[in-house]
Length: 491
Image (cartoon, rainbow, N blue to C red; front, side, top):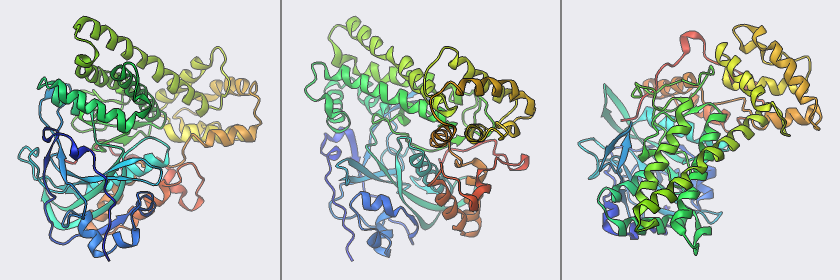
């Protein structure tokens, strides 16, 4: 059987300065671990064919399919605030683009496919653990309704990669609306290549913001569109307790998707200052810092676009500042609206924001589990005898006075108790990819070649808002000895 990808490539048709043409490096003995069959169908691919040995060879980079135009994309970026003028895809190759069943153009990229001209002395490979982590978390984010890159497949290569020890090598097939980043614009801005910036901006508008085609000031409108999407995205992260962990400008997607799941994590106990990433020693990308960092990254994008705004530098800066000024309100509106839904408030009244903040403060003081506190509030909304999430608090009485006020406030809402519970449960997940569960899955795969725990976790996380009695233990927070204190970058 022939594996057919209906490629329709556009990025590789841009000038050569945008990328390096490079094929994936063949691997010894590829073996398919997991194929995302529903996503394959959505992309117009035949999952039965992809699950053959020939399909595994393509998904591992051993064979390049017909119609592919493999490239490594060029970009720069601020990494922890320090600018690096050339980064680029150092261990990833974009095979090409397909049009999915919804008419959306999607990149198909192999991550861990070998060295490229941007590898900076790296081996270009990926270890099995980070590949499984990205598969698990990206698909969990999709199920939670958060814009994200997707995972089509994970393949082991039959080779080892050397990190601190020898680890099984793997390749992730990643799918994205595109892999264009703030850092892509920075790559050309630092080289003062205004023509390339304009070419890139036109490509982005046509691909991601077609409603702006023909706009009177398309580049202003582009910045405004990216600001709005990023503000909404980060609000969604905070509403599920997600910490990206490495919000560099090269990990900030122009399309508004979550991209690059390195040292990412979901909070257990609520802590606004929570950091998991082993490389974030100063807490730059802590949970509560993410909105501020998103705006900082967007400001870097605005700097790149200034030459397209006006030849008058002062005028261009003022116009960019005006657009960036919308971020805080857009983020706040999305975040506060999301919080109101999480606690079952569907109309707005004076005092609502303070009521919600009092809950968050009590949660932080009592180390309450972020996910289960909100989920159990949903239970309590439909059953007055429920414990109002008291069991999540070190001092169960720490929520009693708040719960009284909350019940008084929800009594003013027009919904029935059953309607309120259903609506709250629709936004408050029962299941998230808890760090200790992800680590247990990785250890079983790496140490024992056992993928049954991985399969089960992926299955549970595909329905995060449903009660799944057979898998109830997956909702439990970690025991003290199970807590994961640090997560690590795949490189």
